[in-house]
Image 1 (tube, rainbow, N blue to C red):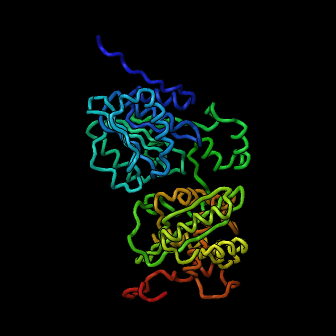
Image 2 (image 1 turned 120 degrees about the vertical axis):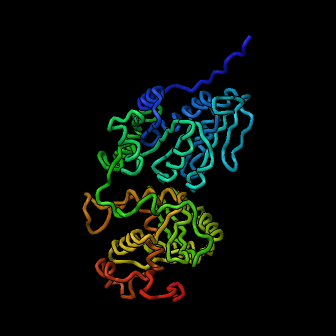
Length: 439
């Protein structure tokens, strides 16, 4: 008598967008795109999709995430399903990367499911995959996506990308647009936050009110729309150009910036290193909501030891908080006040323009803010909208204090003079080694 087939309960597809994706998958479409609002049901569908193709195709299947810190929910969901018949799992570990080997043989060999980070796109090579799921695709580089495309080439394997939109970036251009133009190799669906029946609708309504009922941010985060933010402060920011998986081994110095943040805004702490080519690197971030000062101080103190931080330049409006940090032995000093916020903003914009500012891919809040921080009504007014700027303010405090566009008195510092002034980090014409100038 043949063995009884193993059956798994994958639950119901409660969100309309999940059912649309399932239909396109059944049609055999090569590329599937699930664009979702926050908690829109993307992760649950992705785990279900991976196991479905693992049982049908066998072989090695990768789940790609921006960095390992965001993978815990996927591990929980995967285990939740596999625990129904854990006896089919022959090997399982979660370090150095989560992996499940199953006692199931398919067309492309025994099932191996692994979670990998797109932190370093070049690490996503030298493997043959039968299928791949990229989660939060808008936060990874197009280079990582193309590397995964090559991995499924010989098996003609399908690729699922799920993500909350981040403007009209490569996900829109390479996956959403071909579908909207009628290319039948592509399938796409929207998973709105409000469509998830397991979420409290009153909480969603309050979020929409706080973010602005028809604001671009609410449309992106809740309605899963590809929104072009007009009047972006850092319009020159490019994910592929400015986000990196690895930093240099040595730095000229390491400092940090600190924006205090008071509820409901988070405190933001960003570690910044300047390398010997004059490039600034965002190496680490702390983004803390409603955290008491002693707890924040402990996290910052640990970062000071880890990165050998010389000075932390902080928001000068909270001198009492500065003093508390100093009393704890943390090298925090108030940044110099500027009469115009756009002076510091222009400084960061110029660094981005000249490829003198890079962000490590695990600094997810810094990357997110760079794509959201904007001027009101899409126009360049005196100052940007005071939102989505906590990590960016921290960066601005630090870099401005390390590379002031002066030396001139505060009251004489204007945007016009900043734009006209030579960047102190620029090599002078004919200089042999500006880094040794002692600046």
